[in-house]
Length: 371
Image 1 (tube, rainbow, N blue to C red):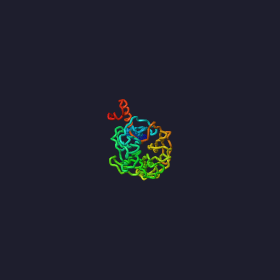
Image 2 (tube, rainbow, N blue to C red):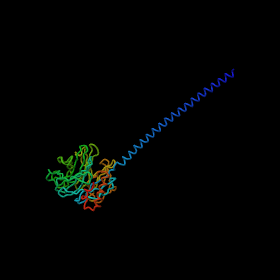
Image 3 (tube, helix red, strand yellow):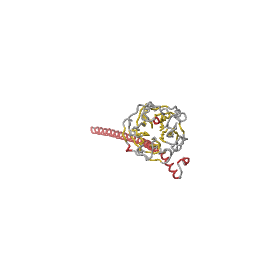
Image 4 (cartoon, rainbow, N blue to C red):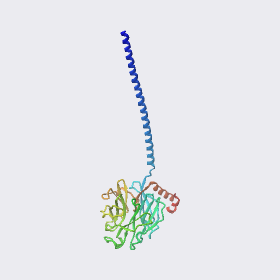
């Protein structure tokens, strides 16, 4: 009897242990399946994320490839300035190459010259060009516009000094687009004898800086004095650094200076501060400014040396001469620098090549065949 009881108890313990082991195995199996389920779900989620990332990366690459690179273009002329508008271009803003050809022949002004070509591009992609149309005897400057730098509108003479009959000249107009007011500001130098203190210069060479504003070059504001630094000044260009922060870069045209200075203002039309000290060698003129990164490069025509110089600045107070780092094709004279799409430069070069291949007498004869 005792033996039977002990045997019964032993069998009961075995059953309990078997039940416990079975439950443990079941829990392991369940946990394993759950873990596998969640691992598979996680893997699927990661695959989806990877696929989406790949799609976004591909779109980014496509967009980056399709985003057209900008190129610097420098408007130019060759002496004696009777042939017309020329260009040079650069990928880095330092080393420049010719774009062969003449792209706009001067047709307005008493002397039919095209000097000091200044250009800007408005948000709609239109290029607007102004230039000196005569050495003396004109009351205005030349103007034309273009969508591609190849086909130009009919040239106009903008008679900004018509109300000043003793005006000697209208020199070096510079065009600035005010993106806040959505209008153009054009600044130039004129000499009105006996209007200002003579200083070092003769009455017929005592220039001051004037300006007009316009939205379309059809309706034009009255001419106003932009800046009188107390001495003869020409070749001015306006630089916008930020809202309410403008720099006027110009030439001190008095003997023996003939160098470049700056002044500052909260508005493109002034009033401007007193002139700074010079930061270029003597006999420098025709300044133009480009921005690379956080630095401004100011190019200037060293006309006695028949070459170009340049300085670098972050604040228009401290300057470093970098003339040894630049290269400008021989014969190029001063204009302005802007950025344009690379395709624009490519089209200019192809247009010229086509004109050569067709043995045309001039570029203008084949422009109508270029679509």
